[in-house]
Length: 471
Ligand code: TRP
Image (cartoon, rainbow, N blue to C red; front, side, top):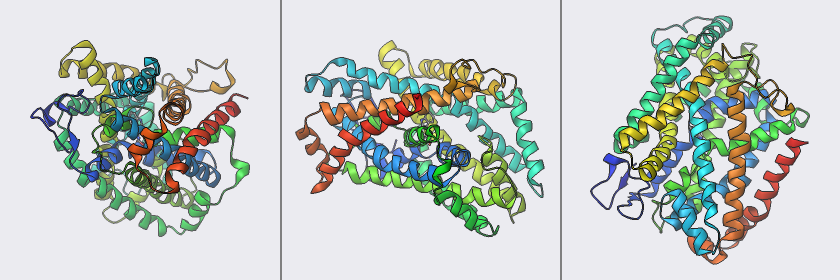
């Protein structure tokens, strides 16, 4: 991380959550924003948001998603950063400390444990999708998109999915890169790179939107994304919108708690959290605005599923001037966005192994990354050999879901919202109001607004969506 450590053991060992001794602070508010945005912005914005929007019929889903970000995601993001900064330790210990200060059971620390588990499960399939992006870097470089029509581009993608060997290779490459960075703890380097790469991704998305405007179907896409048709909204869709708000902001996984513990006391948590949420949302919406005009102008199916961006953007690249160059750049940046998210999630697991089991960094990275890689093989096979393997068919909710679908569902739709609910209850109902006021130092009605939302709206919303989904 771009942090100035108070001791000499800084960057080399990746010491983000190292207990009281030697805990550094972010060098600036901007450094925190960059790191948090690096974790938040990734495949969730560019890959997942467009495809679940397509599957759920557009506008109404987007509206619910935006509401979820504003009303649930943002307050919980603030609450997590607050836990971290007030606790000043690694996530588990911060929660334990704050719980004991309020005379609560140490079992609240389990909340953090579930978060680490969710992160681990997500990373296992995230790496497979990250692998698709890596593979598309090669495809772009070799100019395979040039002049292809929708069918040929589609065949290119289905060819990749049908080949377990290729998927495994790229999954291994992605996980390998993540492990390499985490094992060497080259935080300074990667963070510095991110401060250049993320803005470039932003610019590139703008160029893509610019191209999308020329397709003549931009208006249709805008209407699709922003004109709510509530007849298309299902309860499962609402659940997905809720879960995705947590997924995309990397909530409930201790990441924001860990990052918050390195934030200086004089930085405003609220305005920082707003900045991160807005940046994350803007990237997702830009991706949608770049993708859907291409979908409509080529008569593609918006509900095509996880392959959506891999079947649409290459079409556009194939027709643009300098298309191969731009495509290569785009997929490289996408891989970087995905890597910064992946690193932020492997790091806590590795630190936990180091702290608890006394392993060295190399060994713990190998074990954590290795287990995650192994689980990822299940996702690799979900797209080919095991595509008919839907083990939980006996439950209506899980019917027809492959291993990948199940992992995605379990983490995004159940574990993350549940974690968010616990954070809201912990901070909203269990910590003293005085402590919260002190930590947030919000003026006027803002504190009351945040507090009220966290205490009443967040729990009620999460529980309602849960119950609806079970009925
Ligand atoms: N926030 C990341 C994104 O939008 C995704 C993410 C959330 C993630 N939790 C994760 C990635 C755990 C890897 C592991 O892309």
